[in-house]
Length: 260
Image (cartoon, rainbow, N blue to C red; front, top):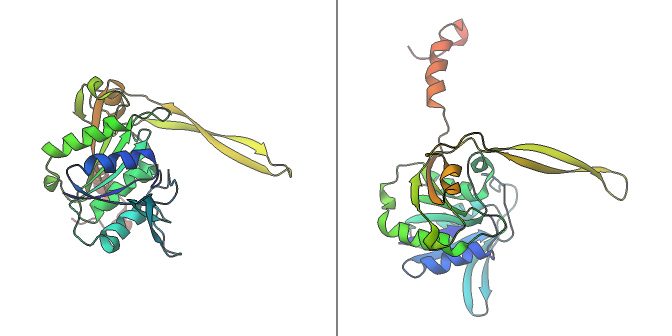
């Protein structure tokens, strides 16, 4: 396949290099990634300043194109301007650390994949679950094997897969589970400090809140050494509450414009 790879950790991060090297064994790979780390940028795009694409080489080896923008910028630019051929797949990763639960709202990695999905290209986000000791080779090996059996052409429009791989040796993976996005989130707080001039500044910190662990939740699967594969959709309408609101709006009089 012709694959576009991006990430949010930067073009020289070990995760993206490992993924590109591994997938290049069987696929045609193009790397278009941020020039520096762009973690937690969400689905931001650049509209007020120009984007620069610079070739990155190590010795005589071409790594890819570094972009002074976000992961979503990289996917847009990669698919519409840099790639000279149509890409069959976008992969965003391998991210350092998990992207599970509410992480997906903030994640530049996940947003890179969702941008590909919005642009009618099958897309996958992949993360190694440990911040301190990510074993990228396990995630890269899994992705190479996964693409041998999974038909990306069957993915529905506006849908991306969010894959979290436990940071363990390949032989210690128990398999994979199809999972849903959990409610795993953070209890945030700010630490107030002062700079040398007496001005206040703040650092954000957070404690993980894991209030569910069902077999089909993402973080529970990874916790038990299963690869978590979660389908995400770019259209975020709450279908259940949509129907409830339609019923409620019938009592709103002239404010309601619900059909029927």
